[in-house]
Length: 205
Image 1 (cartoon, rainbow, N blue to C red):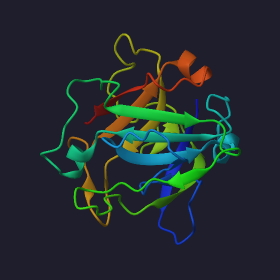
Image 2: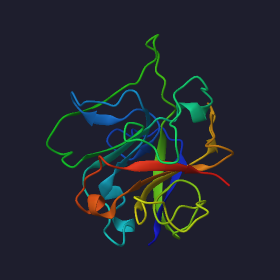
Image 3: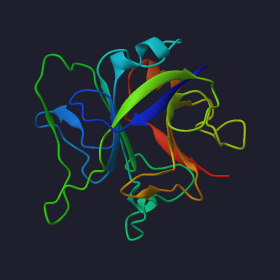
Image 4: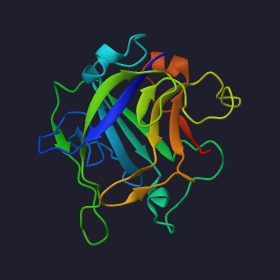
């Protein structure tokens, strides 16, 4: 299985309803937003279709990724998920299949003083990569997992998104000694476009 590499670029382009990393999500109007989690990215599925050689991912619609990662941005008073595998309330992947026949809006996350909190959005450039590549990516094998498979009941699950530690202009994202956050899904759920039961784990060497 190949990986779909995710490279990030600063841009002045309008990224509304396009794939983007950080920033604020573009969601259907009046959508129930998981505002207790940090928005990581939105992936427009028709932008990754050509790189998904095994047809594992949806090829239309939008995928949104949210996670409880404020602690790893250096907010040490923030909630930090406990255990090797995260609870379903700590990680959310939302799939909106129909993006052509409903109205969307950008949902701006703010703090208690009503100030925007999102990092500057980055344009995503996709490319093919080998299965075990490092950095941010979709599919393939986890780069820094030191054992062959996840433990039961997650063995055989597919990596949906790999989020790497990084230094950004605004802040540093550091997953336990420069590790990575791995978001993975049951193959049958992925086939059925059911994203409500994903889990995640941090691996660090």
